Image (cartoon, rainbow, N blue to C red):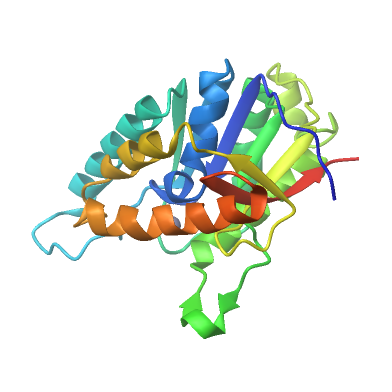
Amino acid sequence: MNFAELQPKVVLGIAAHPDDLDFGASGTMARYAGEGASVYYLIVTDGSKGTDDRSLTPAQLIQIRQNEQRAAVQAVGGKDVFFLGYPDGGLEVTMDLKRDIVRVIRQVKPDVVITMDPSLLYVAERGFINHPDHRAASQAALDSVFPLARDHLSFPDLFAQGFEPHKTPTVLLIRLDGNANFSVDITSTIEVKKAALAAHASQIADIEKTFGWVKQLAAEAGGKAGSAYAESFMRIDVN
Ligand SMILES: [Zn+2]
C-alpha cells in the first residue's frame, strides 16, 4: 500500500507504561512535533511494578516513572502527558478504561493516534510474550477511536460535560518487528529518540546497550523504507 506522508496537527500516543511510546515511536513523535504538531502522551497504568529494586515502594516508583515520562515527552518536544493511574500489571479492557481514553481523545482531538498492536500476542522465535497491559491498553485505545469517541451517544455523561465527539482519521500501530505497511523516516530525530529513552533511567540500566539494539531495529526499518533510520507501523486510515 502506498500512503502519502502524514502532516498531523495533533498526535496522541496511548500506551500502558511509561517508556512504551518512547521505545516504539519517539522518533516519530519528535519528527511530527518538530514539524509543528501538538504531541500528547496518554499513559494508562501507574508503572508501579517495573523494578527489581526492593528498596523502592510502589508510590516512590510511580513518582519516579511519571517524572521520567515527563522528561521524555519534553525531549521529543511534546506538549503534555496524561496519566490514568490504573494499577500496573492487571489492566483489563473495561468500559471505564475506554471512557477515560475517550475523554482524552475528545479533549485533544488528534489527527493521528499512535498505540501498540493489540493483535500481537507472542513472537515464538524471540521467546517473546507481549505484556497483557500492552494488549489491553491498545485494544481499549482502538475501541475508543472507533466507535466510542466518534459517537455522541456513547458515554452521554461525557457529552453532557462538553466533550464533543471526535473522529480520528488515522491510527498508527507500533510494529517493532517491521511487519508494517507504513514507516516514518526518523533519520533527523534518532538522537532525540536516544534522549527520550535515556530519560527512563529506572528502566534502562545501560542506555548505550539498549540504544544499540533500538538503533539497529531503526536501521533495519529504514533499510526497507529507503532512509537511514525509520519506525514502522501498521497504518489504518479510518473509514
Ligand atoms: Zn510496557
